[in-house]
Image (cartoon, rainbow, N blue to C red; front, top):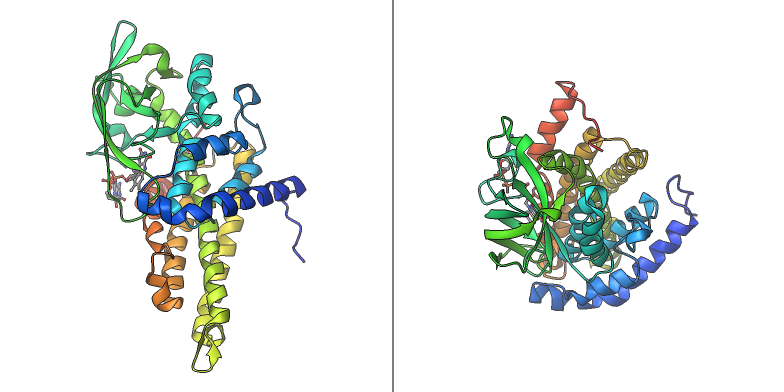
Amino acid sequence: MKSKSQYFNEDHELFRQSVRQFMEKEIVPHTEEWETGRRIPLSIFKRMGDLGFLGLLYSEEYGGVNADFWFSVVFLEELARCGMGGFATAVSVHQFMAINHISKAGSVELKHNYLMPAILGEKVAALGITEPNTGSDVSAIHTTAVREGDEFIVNGSKTFISNGTYGDFITLAVKTKLDAGQAQNGISLLVVDLEAEGVSRTKLNKMGWHSSDTAEINFDEVRVPVENLIGVENFGFYYLMESLQLERLVASIMAVSGAQWALDQTLHYLNEREAFGRKIGKFQAIRHKIADIATEIEVAREFVYSTCWKFTQGEVAVKECSMAKLFTSEIQKRVVDSCSQFLGGYGYMEDYPNRDVRVGTIAGGTSEIMREIISKIVVDAVGYKSVY
Ligand SMILES: Cc1cc2nc3c(=O)[nH]c(=O)nc-3n(C[C@H](O)[C@H](O)[C@H](O)COP(=O)(O)OP(=O)(O)OC[C@H]3O[C@@H](n4cnc5c(N)ncnc54)[C@H](O)[C@@H]3O)c2cc1C
């Protein structure tokens, strides 16, 4: 019998069933087409918007559901079980990373013009922080936005941007104060239309996450109305740092669920496949490794859930979110590698997308950066407060 969860109630489980059914019927059958086509159709965002899947955290006033965070956890867990890391990335970046800033700090106009269509799946959103010359060191970005009357003039480039090729708009980190004493004090967030004059995009080739489009985007004298500034000018770095906690939690939830999915696929194979007259799952060398993997996943899941709980209490759980991202992405990488081994030759086939997992310890903050943050808190006793 399934034990009662301290986090999920019956409504969450009903929602899980409906998301799972949707994934099985409307997403998984398209895996080959979307992976080989290197994109997902924009119409699937509309479909998910119609189903209420894209505004789980956001206000009903703008078309959202305003559900408690555990509905988002359920959604992300199911998203990560579709076997298409690219699809999961496209949808999670759109909902939890790009439009989150507009919801939290954007003006009513920005919410009407961008948040609402994004929640409805009519517009697809990207988040632009990383640049060709800097990623981990966000304070060192070079893209500038210089005020000229009622507009900002944006110049610079971003790279590795998910949803950047086919998306409609981007939440863009720019330098608005070029002579800021401390570099992080001169960064702002702007909403920029990706069809605007002066924007050019180049699609990048990746080793995995094939169905997600990833772009390098250049901004050449792009005119952006000052109304598109999110929140307070020169405060963008602090908005980014705070929202990275949600981003890392999202990555952790999906890493655990993705690892569990890989284990489930492998267990099915081990219980069917025979060698030397026995099921492969009967060999002790394999059973003990499976026991280790199952233990790691279970421990990781509980830690992620307890961090989610802190998040629901409004805690700025920088230490826990960083630990969760570090631990779960490293575990997923190891688990999927072991599972590939247990699947023999099948583990190297396209159907088993272990290529999608490698990026987990890189994107959204590398493992080294997670260790830097954790050591600042643990060794130097640095603390963080909410900017809101
Ligand atoms: C598929 C994909 C999708 C992505 N999507 C997005 C997106 O939508 N939007 C976006 O803005 N970005 C996105 N990224 C970028 C991603 O977040 C960055 O790649 C990541 O933060 C690392 O930055 P970097 O690539 O510039 O590496 P660098 O910062 O150049 O780091 C290179 C190496 O140096 C290490 N390093 C750096 N600083 C330290 C330090 N202080 N101590 C120890 N080691 C250090 C790093 O850990 C890494 O191993 C995406 C990346 C990929 C691959």
